[in-house]
Length: 370
Ligand code: NDP
Ligand code: GDR
Image 1 (cartoon, rainbow, N blue to C red):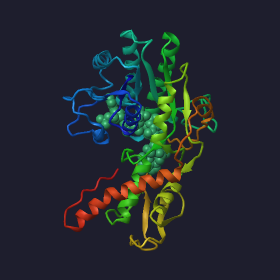
Image 2: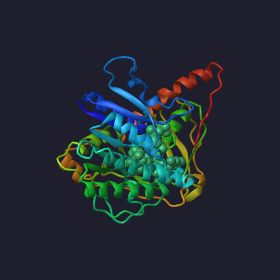
Image 3: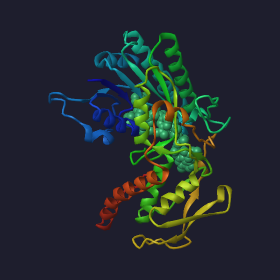
Image 4: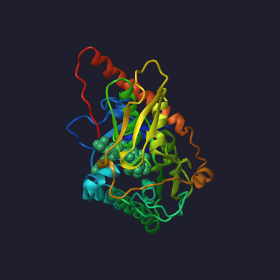
């Protein structure tokens, strides 16, 4: 039985990857940060009582900023595969916490590679590094492939650039099986609430159910190549099953504006949104509502722009070229954007119907926006 160690196991990708590896018969170990509240919502359904025998899912306290802890956990687990998914992963927040981000996202990767080397596991342990399309940053060429030059545009992306190259360097210097998956944006109902897709699908559900008035957005003209996280964790696994270690772009090859994503998400509930004007004064209003379940008056403004969501330097256009991953890995996504939006909106409607019910019975509902 193979053993895998996942950093970032409590995150979106960590949860889907755990499910995938367990279904393949792996023993799955995860690095979990200590938190003052439970932070295991996404993996609670996988929890196994550590007092039982043959436990296949185990969590270890740890942090990517703590070398000795990482060395200890890797020594204890002796993993066949490490998936380094842990990171301060929010681009906008990285402008507020650049040093922390550099440490966790950049040096954290070095700590993993160095631990494997120090422990003499270079022949046994394969390493997947969660690299990102944010490396491309300021557009040099499209679609972006494994050979497109990088031009990072945020402290997050600069930290991930270090992580990318240190992974390549350890592969070349020490003959390690260490690979970068350059993944374009991937989303799901488990996506963190402050990333744009989830922020929108949550707001669509809440506006339709009368729990929120307006949705405040940043740059809605940016374009992203969005896939489903479930498809993307499959690619991570495939990258570690090849004969020789290589880096791969994982993307759909289709790009869409945030504006169109907003329209698609509202359309799932039969609500048509039209934008008027240009620039920061632009507003989105309800043009029609054909769903009898939702009482949204025509002409009501529901989408507004708040410059506080703009980034000091923006990544305007991402569109990936997945040719290499399709031909070498045989990777093929099952979801398109329509199916992804459909699943995300449906999940958030279900989630907020509970709040709606509580509200109708007089309970106070807390709102969390960002
Ligand atoms: P999430 O933000 O959902 O999850 C990040 C995970 O990292 C969480 O488990 C978090 O723990 C953990 N973490 C954060 N800081 C530390 C730290 N200092 N030490 C240990 N663990 C830490 O991200 P995703 O699941 O979406 O992404 C997974 C990885 O893939 C990330 O590295 C991200 O940068 C990268 N990536 C993501 C893409 C995407 O579109 N989703 C695209 C390309 C790359 P906690 O739960 O305690 O906060
Ligand atoms: P991104 O994802 O920065 O691409 O990084 P995010 O969803 O945060 O932003 C995508 C685009 O939407 C624009 N935008 C807004 N974004 C947020 N979060 N909130 C808003 O209100 C808003 N309005 C407009 C942004 O400016 C941006 O252009 C994600 C993360 O998962 C990274 O960890 C990962 O590496 C990359 O995807 C690939």
